[in-house]
Length: 89
Image (cartoon, rainbow, N blue to C red; front, side):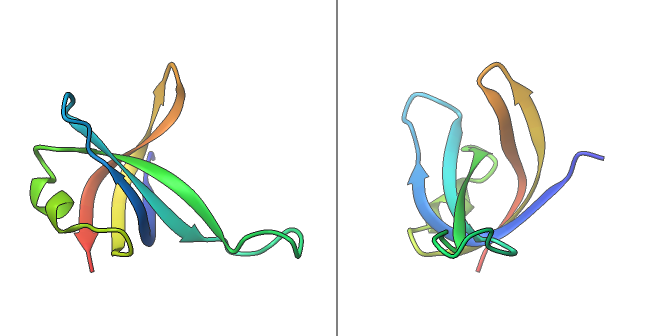
């Protein structure tokens, strides 16, 4: 099964004019810290289709809390996270 679920805070929203894909950088809390010097959060990039998620992308701003369901996709550049459902809280 290829399934991801992410809940976090929008750190950045990248909407290129010449493509169909937008990228959302989400700050997610780590379940534990390996060292005391680490940050409590990781940043995860999720790709969203601009036409399918037009309304959600218009309502998202930096600091918005979002939940994303999706899948992992293999690409030449490496693994990518693809959003299939988005909820802005």
